[in-house]
Amino acid sequence: MKICVLGLGYVGLPLAVALSKKYSVTGFDINDRRISELRAGNDVTAELTAEALAATSMTYSSDQISLKDQDVYIVTVPTPVDDFNKPDLSLLIKASAMIGPCLKKDSIVVFESTVYPGVTEDVCGPELEKHSGLKSGIDFFLGYSPERINPGDKVHTVDKITKVVAGQTPETTEILRQIYSTVTTIFVAKNIKTAEAAKVIENTQRDINIAFMNEITGIFNKLDISVYDVLEAAKTKWNFLPFTPGLVGGHCIGVDPFYLAACATQLGYHPEIILAGRRVNDNMGQFISDQIHQKLQAIFPHRNDLKILVLGLTFKENVPDLRNTKVIDVIEGLKKFGHRITVVDPWADNREAEKYYGITLDDLQNVSDFDCLVGAVSHEPYQSFGTQDFERLVRPHGLIMDIKNMWDKNKAPSNRSFSTL
Image (tube, rainbow, N blue to C red):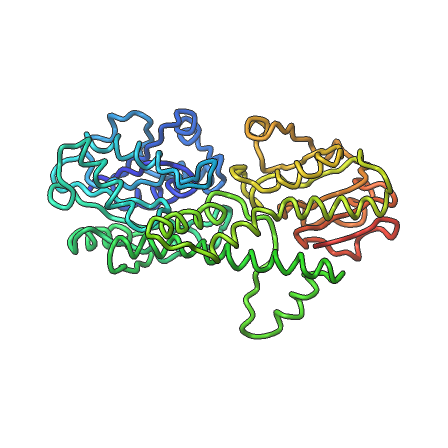
């Protein structure tokens, strides 16, 4: 059986490499640069090592001719939202249009991208039919197996997570079960829509839980108590859910709830909790920048041009991905007050930071003596900061703002202010 994985990002690449241990696999991506890097053993997503890439038998390609003569197509392209937070299915539609002309009798097309229930059969299926001249469910068959890769997570890798699968027919489901079971354990969902729904609620649930933490952070701030001190006490109860406040960015948790909300709206149901959670989380960057500014005003009255060092720009710790990072909301909020911002992030690519956000990244070794240090992303190198680091980076009487609760406040010099959310 010949398998083609379309989209070699942090989801598609690990899956393709794992499948290539048992099957003939072609890894396809429209990005020529990405293909060249992978052939050279360089994965910029940092999900796989050069050794893992060197050991794979997979064939890399950006040529659409490689889509021909395949038995199974697995689509792992992004599903973002547009400027109005509406689902953007354009990449799924483009992928379907590319696959269509290459379909043959009994081909299977599996989608892993996060969507709302119905997209696989009602959007992608007709698109494949249009470009193939074949009939979905008769000539070729659809499947869905939602991705569950957690970027930067070296524990819950593709071979250690349960994979949900569903096919258009029982026979298709069985084939998918056999394919994916060579990689990891399998759960067979009742049907494709059920599998689509399971995926979209996973991230929506996390988004809502984090929104609750962000909301109580604002409440406790007015009470002049730290949310982290509250959580430390609350977590001693056996069934307390240990979520923490923070910036919810990236291309999953910060996006997927809008897919579920759009589906609900189409059905005439107005989702209350889902959209309320999104509003809370999307406002968190502004809340944090306001808090930093207020604390700086207490230390440096009437100063709006302070030097601030922001540690971290990526959307989460120990990953290079800058897409939809909410750290930029904190930075822009501080800039509006007039403060001068320097950003350091050893994981981020300088070209992407400049392209997406107009930010030139600095080197941590070349900067010092700031009025304020903001711990925005808990990258591993930052977690071990001690007294000497704070003394070098923050001038006397300056502010150390630990929004990730990653530092021991006892290591802060006595003549610097230390604060968390």
